[in-house]
Amino acid sequence: MNTYKIGQFAKLVRRTPATIRRWEAEGKIASKRLPSGHRYYDDADLQAVLGVKPERKLTVVYCRVSSRGQKADLQRQLEAMEMWALCSGTAVDEWITEIGGGMNFKRPQFLKLLDRISTGEVGRLIVAHKDRLVRFGFDLIRHLCESRGCELIVVNQMSLSPEKEMVEDMLAIVHTFSCRLYGMRKYEKGLREEFPGAKPSSDPLD
Image (cartoon, rainbow, N blue to C red):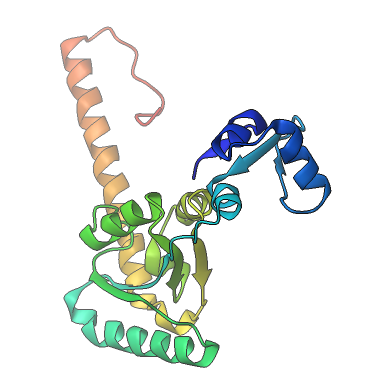
């Protein structure tokens, strides 16, 4: 979303900065403030002044499981989210389901969803539990949503976060770091053979 200083905003709406300040004093428009105290406005303010109807953003539900063997869990997750939407009176425009690990940031549907959030197409993203979106880095995704005007709703249905999947993810982390540790030790061994007089490091991961 674009932001504008008062002079830029006044020019876009074909008024003077003094008029914009008067509108604010009269309660016709509300400015936002930077930490420095300076006024600024955004596209929503611009649309409101120009009488442009804001473009309707989509409400999207994202459901995920890690493996094809969890298709039954995916269906159960989807049905539970449908029930939640019905009970809460939430109109959902699109339902996205995906099979892929929670630590895999290269999931096709997940990446497309992030692109659509970045362009402002998605106004609300709903997930059953935060690990249905990502296993790690949830706060970063939430920051992206907030910066693009997308509300991120976590229904927090713990029953839809399979314990077995979490264990598999934890084992994958251990395996990844074990491989890294082995690789670093192998690399250090090669250095010692190449440079016999070199002092080995106390920690191969430092």
